[in-house]
Image 1 (cartoon, rainbow, N blue to C red):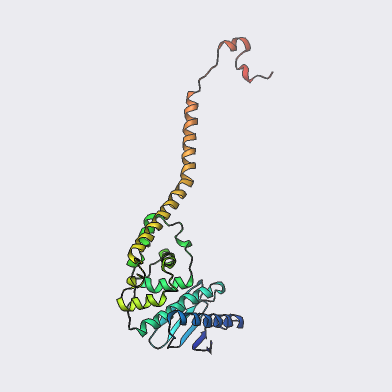
Image 2: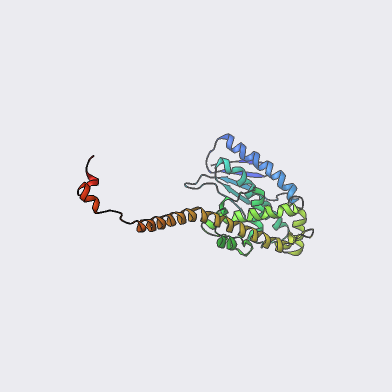
Length: 269
């Protein structure tokens, strides 16, 4: 283990990684720090301890925390995932600083994670084949207060990402970010924070859920028909052949045996 300090960050590596990897992480941190300072309109007042550790059987994973004196950021060294992991977790760190500055100690899970996946630009592949009933239930992320378990965990982030980009097209979150924060600070409501310039958050949230439900329903019907129609065709074909076979009548004429001999059809010419 060794440590190196870069601007306000204490970088701690659990293993000794190649210089190109540590330089890459430091470059991304500096770039993201500069971007988020402008977005949030603040600077971090506490040091950030970044840990990179390879854990057996663990893929891309990141975590962020704050103990009142220091921010903690952990990521696994999956090279292709490092940029998105840092974007996600660093967004958390700036949200922690903003909450601390404004005396906010309880914020909805969907707001904190939603901003992080929006900044990360997470994809939505995990919900593409979800059945309509599960889609309607799991898309109601506002009612979810703790992290889901199992496969629903990744879908939770996918739904959040899908919704945040849905409202981003409506109000341009980046351009109105400070207005969103000020509204949240004034109203104390994460939902009201997005109700800007006539944008009705509750109405759009319901509209988005309905859209996702019908999209899931259409996909479910298509996938069902893709195997159901061939199965129906095969079943009807079997029934048709069976009926046809029952209609076949024996046209054998006993008189022919008297002329050509018994079982004449089996004799060679």
